Amino acid sequence: MDKCMFDECDRDKVAIGYCHAHYRQHKAGKELTPINYVFTGTMEDRLLWYSVKTEDGCWEWTGFVSDNGYGVTTDNDLGTGRLAHRVAFKVLKGEDVTDADVIHHTCSNSICINPEHLQKIDQLSNVAEMMERKSYQKEIKNLRKTVEIQQKTIDKCCKKEEKPNDGI
Image 1 (cartoon, rainbow, N blue to C red):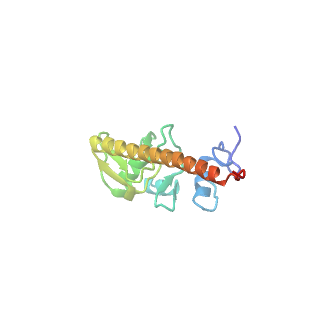
Image 2 (image 1 turned 180 degrees about the vertical axis):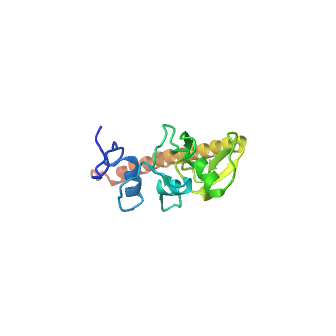
Image 3 (image 1 turned 30 degrees about the vertical axis):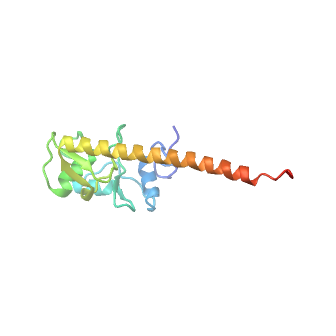
């Protein structure tokens, strides 16, 4: 696989020639900087170091992202992988998070770690919100299809009216 086009980076490219971290820096309009892959600071420092603030207020995780689209960081004490948004909620909000707790993204951005975009809710509420969001997205898709069909009908009508008169 090709490498990131940032000179000091040897990670695989994933988007427009950059690795995930440099792509996020580029997308956020930030100056591209080397990514420190070994971090020994506090967990709060690590969370802030590996995130990029976007225009919509998200703090997008630029570290490892799992196949299901969630940021993953390692726990300083145990060295085990943890979901970055759950760690951010615990560290930046100062609230305990149990394995049973659901940390919900109010922004619908699975790599966001902004504590203002995270809330602790129960599983039932999380599923209900996701279902509502999906049905909302489905409704938008259906409306777009309806508009496209209507636009094609209008275009056909306009083309018929523009045909030259054969003198009849």
